[in-house]
Amino acid sequence: MRIRGCVSTDTGIGRGACTDAAVLKVANSSRYGRIAFAVLCDGDEESYGAGKASAIVAERMAEWFQDELPEILQDTELELMHADALMRGARMLTEVLKTDDIRAGFSSRMFALAQEKIRMRLQEITDELNTRITGFGRLHHMYPRTAMTCLLLMGREYLIMRIGPTRAYLTTEEGRSVRMPKEDGSARIFGQEGVRPVFVQGRVEKEAGVLLYSDGFIRKQDPDRLRKLFHKYTRYSERRLDDALRKLTRFVRKQGEREDAFAVFLSCVC
Image 1: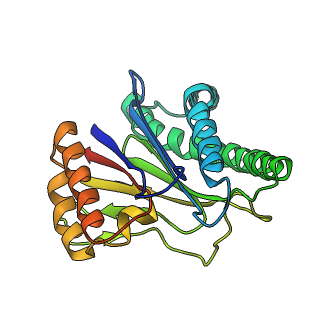
Image 2: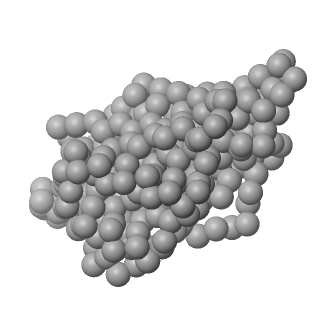
């Protein structure tokens, strides 16, 4: 699977400080293929210190991807290999197993088990981050708050985690629709009590795109116009993707948008 991506960051007009943050990382693995990770933090413009909260979250999530995810994948693979070895040993007396049959389901089982471990760890990191952000706020007499949406793409499997309202569009292969992960009414964000991540998982189609965005980037956009553009974007080179996002940002500026306009776009072609 080919993965292309780019990040567009545009600070709001007439603002003293940026309140949003974004991260995009794509890793190459000889065993798992390309793995992509994107984070979009949308700071609450009404809360003092929102930019610091966004930076704290984005940096910590980037550290998790770089330092912890490889260990999770390796441990998960070892567990499955050990389980398969025991299973083969138990069946050898009664039947002959085909190696191709074993390999066929290994990848999907591995990603499924890895996602379970990833969810548990990200829940722990959510609690850790919220403690850091609220502690920073008390220390500096401010109330930093930020929402976050992150995307992990492994093979053709994706996992989206959000804190606060969803800030992600997923496109279909045919380009007929743009859909958002289902909302559950939760609006709590980092810096508030009772923050809990919401997870959405699924499988990308042969040609699909994912957009993570801040409110400033999407608020003035025309959904029908985006729907048509996304279908073309999945085939763009990274340079053309970068130009396309910048054009969309200039469009919302012309429409009067003054807030930070951040966006991350990933295209997946299998």
